Amino acid sequence: MNLRRIKHTLLRLSTEEKVIGLGALAVFAGSLMPWYRTVAAFDSRTTEFGAFSGDLGVVGFVVFLLTLLALLTLLGEHLGIRLPRFGYQREQILFFLMGQGAFLVLLTMAVYLRRSLEFTQAELRFGIFTAFAGAFFAAFAAFALLSKLKERQTQAFFGLTPQATPEPTPSLLDANSMSGGEEEMPPPALLEDDDSASFESSLPSETSSQGDYFKRSAGV
Image (cartoon, rainbow, N blue to C red; front, side):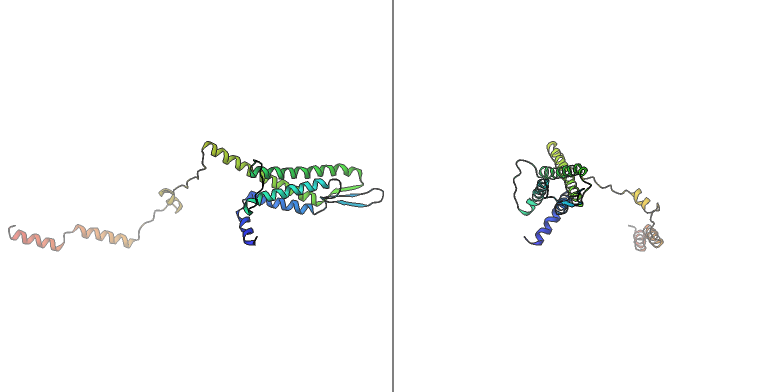
């Protein structure tokens, strides 16, 4: 696949789809960072846990897998990759995958906070916050896509089509008010020419008066 096709694929995405893609990348980046750190009381040993380490590493792997499936679902139809949908819409699948990912990351944060009471010092690391923020905003964008899908389905069911609001036509009064309320007048030279032309047209021509004289003299 060349870079031009990838660029065109990214340009065809809507704003919500771009947010989902960025959220998925944030989850991937957060999975590579530490999620939790503890300091033991008896020997002051520091231990860090990532997304795939510790007894909650399975949860991190599931979150990573859900995010990967969401990214494939998002870009699959643009890249020619066909994935089974099992009778569900694309927006519904995206909302389910990213929503489940955000819920699992939040659940992991709650478990780690509960365990922090057993150690002298324990804290959540930056990676788990990055993963949760990416999954949350991606799920929110997927919900926006799902809302738009429901709106289109409702309009199609009732036979409604969105109509664009016509732009108002500026009237003469609006044009005068926009120009400062002053009506444009033609230049004085044009007025003089018009007056002289109307005056000349009202006078009988010399040729017509001579013709009438000869007719009267001939007795016609």
